[in-house]
Image (cartoon, rainbow, N blue to C red):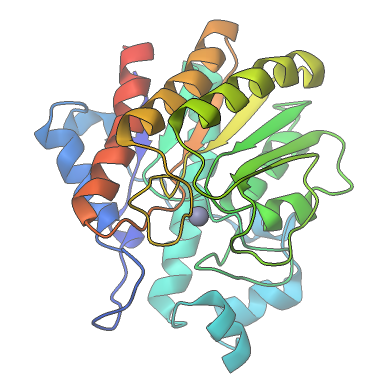
Length: 300
Ligand SMILES: [Zn+2]
């Protein structure tokens, strides 16, 4: 049974009309319970990430300025979220959620965070709604504590995992794989260990064929003993920031492909939610809930 990290800190008060769909973090928890996918006892509060864990990935200068609300106006613009004590707490809580998910995955096969996937956070700056890089922090923790030797990050958010790629550029023990829409944010891409830039409008069949042809050979080659999965649902055709054309069924089949492979190989996997910006909040919530549904089917 997957353990689900969630916290009241995951939410955030944003100015009316802000384009970040913060409500999904509460609604997905509600929906998982309502649909009977998860039970109340499957959820736990992950606490807050320690400075020690943050500083393995982020520069002290950046983290201290985040913590002390000293980001410049330009940095806040690039981030796309107003800085506040609440945002600092949210970032600490969400990073702890992914780290705890990783530790639970080592015990149970899978651990899931009802937030995270903040892959545009670099060592020294935040961008695109991402303050701290949760998967990088968790991966560095596993390596530092010798809980994993070779990590594979599978980033299937529609946007390239640029922060993650840059953070682990010179770390051979972390292989970064990003499959994303080519001509989309971020404009300046970093180099992952493997990038697949898809054509605009790529649909289910082509997307799933590409993933099927890539993932299993990649696992055979990299031989990871731990996988992080960034399961952004901004690959949907309905997404406002996406530029791919997956259906909800295709998105679910994507999750089945990734999680099914982890399950079949006995590879521990930690899942972060990633992005989702469909016009209708219900489409975002449903697609994320499918990721959890697939996990509960595989790890009953
Ligand atoms: Zn995204």
